[in-house]
Amino acid sequence: MLKGIPKILSPELLKVLCEMGHGDSLVIGDGNFPSETIGKDAIVIRMDGHGACEVLEAILELFPLDTYVEKPVGLMEVVPGDTVETPIWDEYEKLIAQADERGGAAIRHIERFAFYEEAKKAYAVIATGEGALYANMILQKGVVV
Image (tube, rainbow, N blue to C red):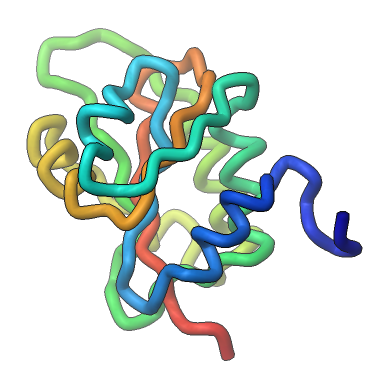
């Protein structure tokens, strides 16, 4: 146990966050995300009992977002014709604003299949138990200053 580290962050996840370098990406997948398939060439960390917001909040306490790219956060956009609401995106924006002065300006939306292709290049994939739809996210790591 360590002081100042969010308890939700397992030793395995802390190690992965520490190993990641500038420009590496991390996927936070919702409960429906094909984490094991997409992450077959990455490190997959299971956090099934946790929601995406609590995972994101804890990660952003330690993980700098890339300042060398305009939008280091990518969300899977809603498929055209799908009538799903995405209130979780508002929560993500609040959490990102607490950690990065760009707030919502740091977020981009990625078409579903393009998201999957980008996610396949991630260093690690976190599989959460998040029940909200379209709650998948890619974070690009910045530098610690």
